[in-house]
Image (tube, rainbow, N blue to C red; front, side, top):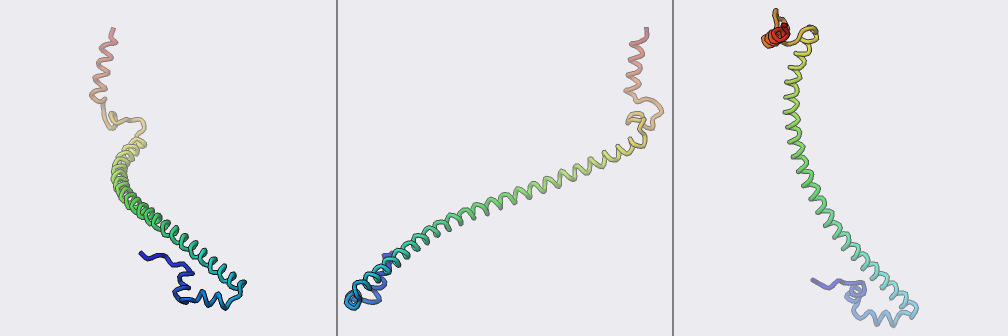
Length: 141
């Protein structure tokens, strides 16, 4: 890995020995201004490098979070498919029992004075007749 280059290193590569020429041709105030600008640019470059490193780390973190969220979505989609299949099965069963209930309730609506034991029967059901016989026998004095 190579050493990171700052602005002064780049200037030194482009203009070898230019420090002496710049120093001789510039006044002290101009040289100080030039040096301040170079230092400012170095600080900005270092700040940008630091910000870039921070953003790169943040990108890695967000990519990891995205992968986790994608895996979670896949898991939840599978659970949703299972729940939908269960719902379809339960709905079909409910519809079957609802049809039986509707048929029975409509019969009860047509014959409100009858129950399932006496409906269209000319005599009592067997267990009702037995209960009446037992009651009569017990209450004969």
